[in-house]
Image 1 (cartoon, rainbow, N blue to C red):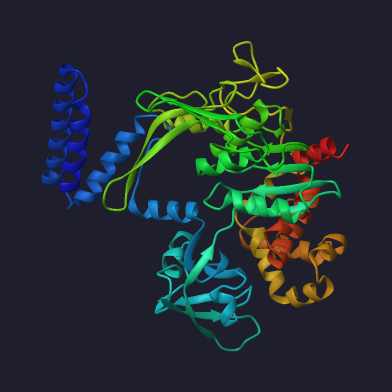
Image 2 (cartoon, rainbow, N blue to C red):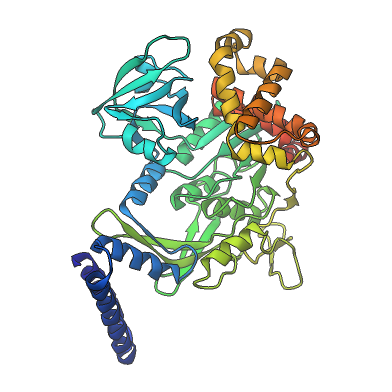
Length: 511
């Protein structure tokens, strides 16, 4: 109740800034809310916790606003902070749940798990005194993560070993990288994949760019990147633009308008750039793509981005939870609003519209703007519209393929295959380049995939299988490359084969 009263008091203080008649109405509504909470707690059939009522009230209250204002319980805030800070204290494994068991995909180099001799393919069956069999994916981090220096005992089943193995690990800081891949796509074109904007994104990107030899032609892949920290987006946009260039404007009702300019000359002021975006690219990704498009500094390739252009202020509530309140909106340098249209309180419709492709077509009503260097027409109306549109390639898509992917059959098939073939694969293909050049999924591996699907009650459909076979073979090869050589291996397989935006960018940049 104290927490509720504190929130109500804060709201009352804020309301005092309104006109007297508005203030009186605000007080009446707050009294109504407090009375409803007290009555619910008193008369409801089952015993209720006040925290449960307050959390529900906050969630409901903020859901009546724009689609991005939200209440974050303590547990959700902990996950957000881990993701944005770029590190956490844990044991250093990447894992998945296969057949109710935690299966290690890889160990972090120099991490606690690698240090005690854990290997990819190990199955964790017990964490301290708790059975790990049957745990849900979201339950695992709470058990493996903990205070730096604390210990955790893991009991592990390893194929080929007759008895269970026992490891004691000392938790340590584990970095979370935001650059998934960086390599030379051709002798002249570099490629960098950024998965989100965390605390270390700019430094990771800069290091990757230097490692590639500072290429003068670059593909920046922001597909699937849902955003993150504003300062990292500003720093990345600065990398390509001269000192003083306007990068972003924020404007709101109470918050003063702010203009963000490049504070220094970027390290890649010349050279050709392509930025890849899709319908998942949002917020910080849209800031970068929008700034480079407005200044005619990059060609944007792919599909119209999400359209998340509202700025939230995160306000802690004293117990680890927080409120995110929308205070202003993002505008690109040319004045385009990034946020796509929405109707307050209709959050479900907002996300359904996104799934339907909301307003991807250009009509007479679509706002027109001019780019800042060449004066070419660019379009507003929400999201960043690509200069070169590339639709999803559905040539090899089938219902059978979709079932295999959604039920984790490809992942499980790869896990089982590596149980017996990992050492042979590493001996035959000691480097990723060897694997990329020579490995092809065998018919035996494809048969194993079909059988695994049948164990998941997915009926084999020969026509669908034949249609999707090239895609399935590529997906299996990509997943194997990821498990054997790291996440970059996945993109090195997928990009040249089933990534039309990537191929379009290469064609554009390598001419």
